[in-house]
Length: 203
Image (cartoon, rainbow, N blue to C red; front, top):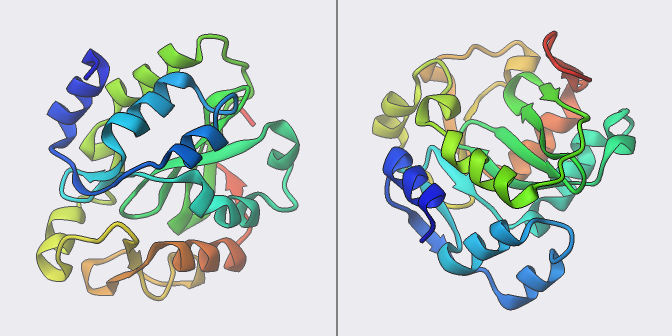
């Protein structure tokens, strides 16, 4: 295990719900995603970390989610994006083939931040992403621990969601959190509110 990923696990916690990454998936993204990321997949698979607060995922399973969020926006023209990680609350980490980790979508409130700068040292970029990842970055108003006690540790295909959705007037409270299927809920959120940039986004 390389040092960057060791530091990541030390910060986030041991993996849970490991899914092996088949050779077909690694071959599918060769030349599109950095070799270092494909190496991580081969060694570690796709897992949850921090008792499920952060997940590495198979981008192929989320192609429809990405397409639905970006449809009709200027982001479609900026790069070809692949979702490779997410938080339990719906923070989506998208990797651009030319711009690296340049797009982060906060699905519950339909906001994004991004950068258009092209990255040359992609393997180093991947290592820096995992090195900089912290549990607090993936929490939502410190609700993860109480939500975990209330709802249990989420499965690999589950997330914590506010019901009704915040963008429909719902409240971001523990009482309104439910455990739902991730892909289905992310698709729903993408369709009920227009994706807009944070004020600090480069886009």
